Amino acid sequence: MKRIAVLTSGGDAPGMNAAIRAVVEQALHHGIEVYGVYYGFKGLVEGNMRMLGVNDVSKNIKLGGTFLYSARYPEFKEEAIQKIAIKQMERQQIDGLIVIGGDGSFQGALSLTKLGFPAIGIPGTIDNDIPATEYTIGFDSAVSVALDAIDKISDTASSHNRTFVVEVMGRHAGDIAIWAGVASGADAILIPESDYNLEDIVESVEKGRRSGKDYSLIILAEGVESVEDFVEDYKKLAPHQEVRGIALSHIQRGGSPTARDRVFATLMGARAVDMLLDGKEGIYLGIRNEQLATFDIVQALQSKEHTVRADLIQLNKTLTQR
Ligand code: ADP
Ligand code: F6P
Image (cartoon, rainbow, N blue to C red; front, side, top):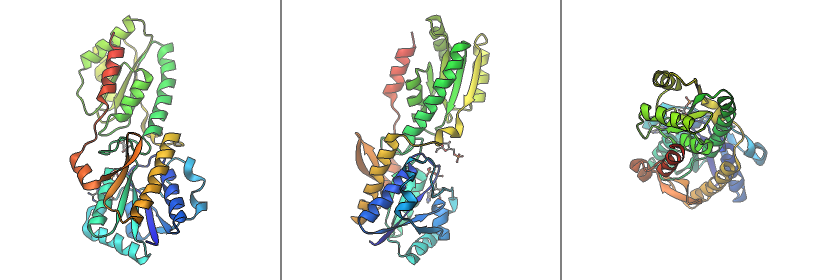
């Protein structure tokens, strides 16, 4: 293998640039060249790529977003389109591809491998919703941004004795809500993986107030319902509380990656290059017990093994239900 390519796909996540940087530096260390593909699979099909050098990546380890840009490109599900992407890579004498993205992007990587083109995945999504791995690049940064915002909101909540409902990201996964909720001592954490009872939530908030808390926080994952709808229903059951709702939205996807995101992104980027050089394909990297691990894309995506930290939710309930 003399030349490989790297792309970012799906929603951007802080730490993607750190992963690209590690791919480039590790490839150069092994004496092979790296092409950066712009705009994910769309750019791959259009041949929108160029060779990357140390200068392109050395300062990027601290930058949020992805300097290779990202795109959603549903056309990539078609085999004829995938074959064009392979032709484009063959034209540039590229022998292997590293895909940084979520489970949708991994399906794209897998489809290339099935057509005989080696591809490896690196999990990059703030939602932390990829099966098997305990961690995805961007999750730690997103939680840290959410927590910082929640801490600020709690100053006002406390000063005015209000209840704030904070909507955090997570379309299908409650991980950001759980971590930001436990870290902020929230009165309730609502996630898409479990049902909730509104009366119980109101009761638990009121108990907290009776026991001396001067404000209340409810953390709502976006996949449950919109904060506007939730607040409307909540107010009907809690007319005596002063309630405000806020959606943190895309600020959670931006900003400089945390040290943890940078370090794991670096480990994964470098290992992905080694994997391609070892002739591996159809796999993705991840973290188990703080160590790098590899997973089979087909098996992991079929098993949908990702589970949320129910122990943390339980602990939060115990600590907040007086
Ligand atoms: P994420 O990677 O964050 O899950 P998406 O689900 O939007 O984000 O997927 C990103 C891109 O991956 C899609 O726009 C498409 O180009 C590609 N992709 C998604 N699903 C498939 C699939 N089944 N086969 C081939 N490519 C896919
Ligand atoms: O998958 C990451 C994520 O940020 C989700 O939490 C959110 O629902 C989605 O992407 C929003 O994507 P977009 O900004 O592309 O609409």
